[in-house]
Image (cartoon, rainbow, N blue to C red; front, side, top):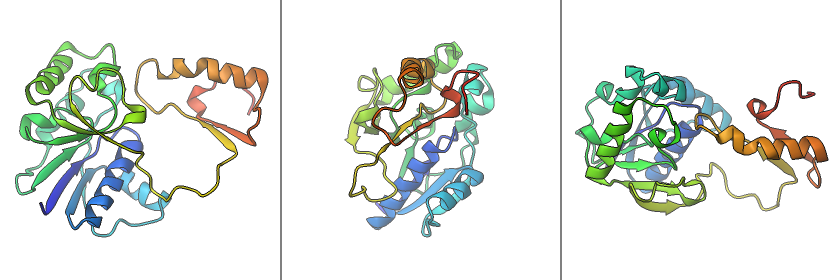
Length: 224
């Protein structure tokens, strides 16, 4: 194998970050990767991760995937695969958690820890049914951080458990801060954090030096 096309889901930065790190790992074993992701997201990650990922071919491509767009049945998001450029020249296509890629590339490998059609309760039936049909037919291989794998994933894919997608070596010391973050998109994610936030507001930061909380998780009227 000499070349791999990696497709990143464009929701937030976490998906593109994971795809960039996968591309970097592929480079390390002598495989030429091409990343399909929004250029603005790539540029921001190059800055925040403090490296330019030289050697990775970058292709500006937006899947349009977001919870809002999928719930609305926006064709730009639900049928993103129809805008996918020709990738037949690559030895392998590796896509984020977007099973629609299997329509064009049945042997594609997926990555991630969830599927949109399972996490969003009110997506159009056609979107849900298409994803389930593709997963049943192809049962793809999926690179998954088992720590974050959601229920139902293992029944639909062949999971290849991996660790965390780390951008830097593991620190030699244990941090003293707490980060509370839910990510974007899934139904019920914020609700799971309600008791955590309430406990912090009620009892304080405890043994931590500082607590960092994603702003969207804070109830209205919370002091700065």
